Amino acid sequence: MKLSEVITEAEWRLLADQPSRTSHSGKRNLAVLHTMYFGGLGFAEVCDLSPWDLNRSARALSRPNRPRHIREVLAVPEESWSVLEAWEEVRPPSPHFFSTLTGNRLKKQYVKGFLRRYADRSGITKPTRAVAATAEHRLLERAYAPRLLDRGLPNHELARTLTTVQFPQAAPRRLP
Image (cartoon, rainbow, N blue to C red; front, side):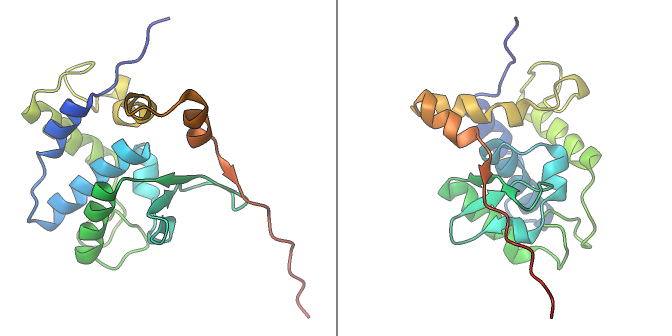
């Protein structure tokens, strides 16, 4: 069985250096990159993330599009949380956390496109010419578990981190 290629931390830094730090779209794109790499979210999940999926007190994200009784909570590093807060300060009012500058939902094709441009500019050629190529569209998402192992997280802790956290479902409330 061939192991999937993942993006290394050095390649991640090259990729994260590409977005503008001053423009609104650059702040958003950098926050998207952090969410994909450090949160392990895919393209559709990033586009579906709502402001209510951010747990500010725990500095964590809830994976979107899950049933209410199953919530997967993803802790992100302090550096990533500050990038998310920088985007939150300038983002337009929208039901989507990552939105266009006019408040509309981001499209997966747009995210794949800027990721491809950033990869080309930074010289990352894994596994095809672009990081976001259709054959290997989960390169950033797949880097989540190996990154945790590289940082010394034991296997049993990794399994716990990657397991869905289930909260008991609230009893249905009867209306008077």
